[in-house]
Length: 328
Image (cartoon, rainbow, N blue to C red; front, side, top):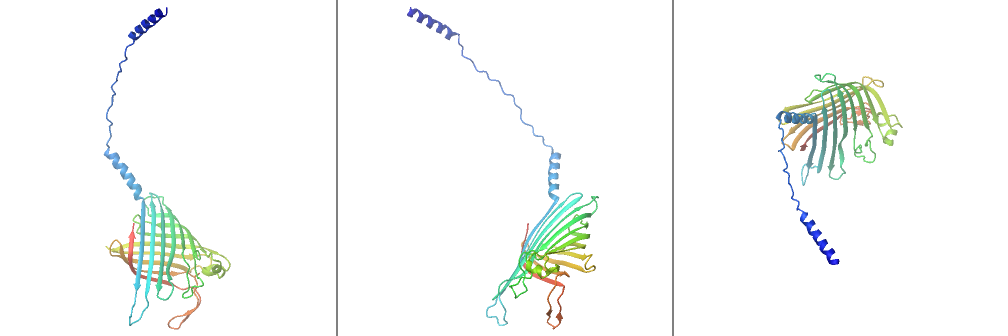
């Protein structure tokens, strides 16, 4: 019986195996077409022109100057003292011009020192200035803007009445001048000249050092740290290429108070003439005139023996130097 079952099972398996056919794979061809790149020169030119116009709306200026002078003597019959002087000046400007408005920002940092044999270094220049203005015009063809202008002016290090270096006469934020004005500004597209006229200007003088404020320095009342005034101001700057390697720049600011001392004008006027030798070397001649009725000076006798009493005086600074200049 077992043999019969085995034979039957083998016969069924053989028949089933014979019914199975090997499947043949079928490959369908893939239809493809090359990608087409549309080259529209007019569209490309329009795109690049638009990007270029957006970049041209930003006027960027960065410049760092370092002027140095050095004197050294050894067995010099006429006499003299070894000395070295250095003045650093840095300017950074960003101006955005749109069809109907502009936003202008300028940061300026000045610092100078002088060292002579046998004495500690002395500060010769110290300035920290930030100016930001926003202007709007209704007519895109006009160069006159309705403008709001903000200025912060201070210094970075202590100032002394040399040779006394024990008692500072000025410090960082002592004083600090904060000015905010509303008015009209003439600003042509070439950015070589602008004039700002503000009939409403708020000027705040801050003296955040307690010792100086207790003395009533820089026009604040004794014991107070700020003094605010309302007046008018006129400010501007002009840059002119005199020759191929000679450039003139001048900046001015005039302020008058309405309430306390009407008719008394504060003056801040600086002019520089730059002579460029090459891309990295330049010479500079400059002067700076200031007058502020709130800045008082102590009495002294000049070389002719004339006594000058305590009060405000015209301040004058002159610069002549040659050094390195890098614009980027």
